[in-house]
Image (cartoon, rainbow over the protein chains, first blue to last red):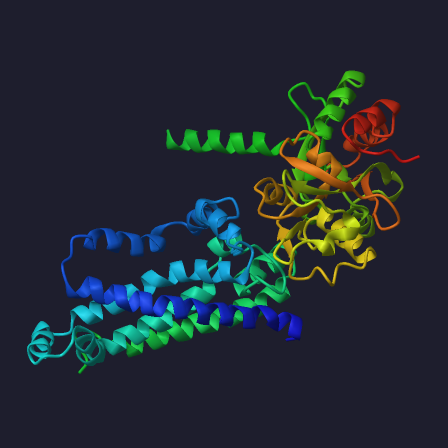
Length: 223
Length: 258
């Protein structure tokens, strides 16, 4: 592949890494919150986090443009502060993060729930601070599930298309991630170009899925 | 019962397939036309119908490149009316369009448009836009208006310097929508696309040496039904160069070949 053809590959990887940087702390934190206690907003948080999994990407894209576009309630405020998100790589990062988040939470939360409650209680009675309990007991017990979640979330982030197209647009060299480059090449009848990215994403997707299937604990905890 | 229903369905299918002649045995001429002619073509068809009783003209709209592929695959289209010469010329090469029927019937002009209240720029000053401001054009590989926009920007020597700021739309309507929503500072569309659009401003029409001439090209195909359509198809193509047709093109924002 030439440099020009490789650009979408590098861009996708960058967007994926940045999206993971956003998603990882948020997703692991949310999974812990949801797994550890029955708080009042549990159902609401669940619905908000999981909704992007079942909503059409165009709906997510619409909300993003509507809210964070230059004339949107949040976007307009950012615009006055000198920050513009729409049609930038950051827009792609945001769209990717939203769809990647539920993937991570869905994998991490059950793994955390499977950590025996007694262990957590014992650690607490032995005087560990809450964060230390999380780090040394919960995370250590659930790390396979969390790692699987991170991997799948990364691949999902790289594969985001619909909301990205609406919010980040198709700007060659700037926002044309692999999925967007596939769409552009396909429309232009340039199937050979599309095929290269299709191959990269197919291999990546299969590898991640196969790895996740082998790596995830079949059930319960891994100590 | 089930058998009868199946037969009826088959009959319907045949009715559906049997295009070309309507109930009274009149010949129908189908026109494969570029989406950018969506407004002017019905008016041309109406005027043609007033003069000629005989062939009924049925427009089929699509992207020029896409229509070309369909005609090569044998779609029953008798006349082509495209927004650019290249797809017509390719169809002449492949033997689908009759070479001596090819005719430039009108020209379209590109316009640089912007949202109301947006920055005031012209074709020569696009580089002065703030770094975060984007410009929308049609995807040059898919949309003829986008290919013309690329030609114009190349002729102005701005194509390379604007890289990373050009948002590609899947068709002209998408470009127009980006501008109307104010998400881009400028966009490039045909003049004829914005005739009745209220909330965009024409920043500058494309005039001068850099401006590519967007030819509207007509031609009649060899057709799939043979000679019965050739005459009527040709009469419609010829009608497109009559004074009456030229007036309609002009009234809809097109320019005329001499």
